[in-house]
Length: 489
View 1 (cartoon, rainbow, N blue to C red):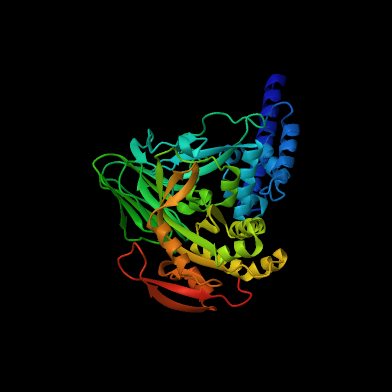
View 2: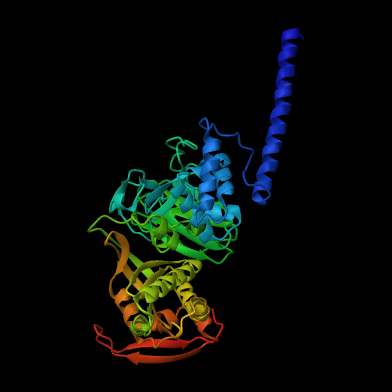
């Protein structure tokens, strides 16, 4: 063997050994990632950062921590932004960040909002395609979102639905970490991690695929516009999929570990099974605007005048003070005003602690919104439980007594007086129920009281069902009056 030939063989042998070691290392890293023992699939090369980016980021971390909503996470947020995988950072999901940092979801959302306010992050409102979930339109403000968009990948026009396809994400400020434009194609693994299987079938083709899917929520669809099917899979054999020109239909489950696909259309179709657990990380518009942090940090972030958006479920809490007129007469306007102002701050703190937001104050009253009716009720219990402590701190002769009413249902989000507000019968009902409160109690609509989580809260409380004729409502309204036990909340 010549020297040159021997040299080439030696190089090939060394390359093979090196490649084998690298592959083995990658496999071990992937296994460790799957077990949750490491944060990434593999060791990442450090990103190219602009000169002075770390120094700027450190200063902004301090600004985040100075914010009421920084939650002491400024340095950890900066580290994630500077070193995280580009696919995670370019469209940073606050709920996923909360899991990464080991903090509550609300705190994760708050620290992202504080990061936007400080200039570390930019805000993105994504108008997602209802079919492929791709962000086909992105705006930096709610007021810039159109009422709909077109998805060239799915070849469909779709409308804006605040609850289902408007999502808030964040991205590093360009001066901190520039993110490249573009990304993987529609079916790229990092762009669509929720797609568990995709099969391209010829007209009339049937195929069985070895696939075992754990219990969970799934969506079955085709890439062609049409009917989709959402299922809650309990585990075990998975239903089959039958595609037609109109969309997807379910077939009976086959053998365990196998899923059947059938294309009954007269043209080629791609059939997909998607994991819908992505919804746990989606921060929708109704969730964002019902958080105190968003309203405090971005008070001017409203819809365009004349624009509106519907939400199917919002819990609204109204408070008022019993005998506030007498308070002004008794202690004088100046002292009474200070007491009322302090009571607003007291109530706002409780609202924030229970993942709600103060929408507005009206005279001595407060209107607050909550995405979860159980959180609204927990906040009401906390208000009644802690008002005595507030009164002692104020040192006034006669204690303040709070009247409370809560109702939940659909509503319309509008731009009113340059702020996001709610409008409709749900708002009217909540306000009227507060008017039925005697003070020291909590008045709940039947709809709120019937919520399973609220029912658990009421099980240990003294409650009575009543009805009353209310202005603007044709039939008498039934409600539940709760008199919280001392210390509830």
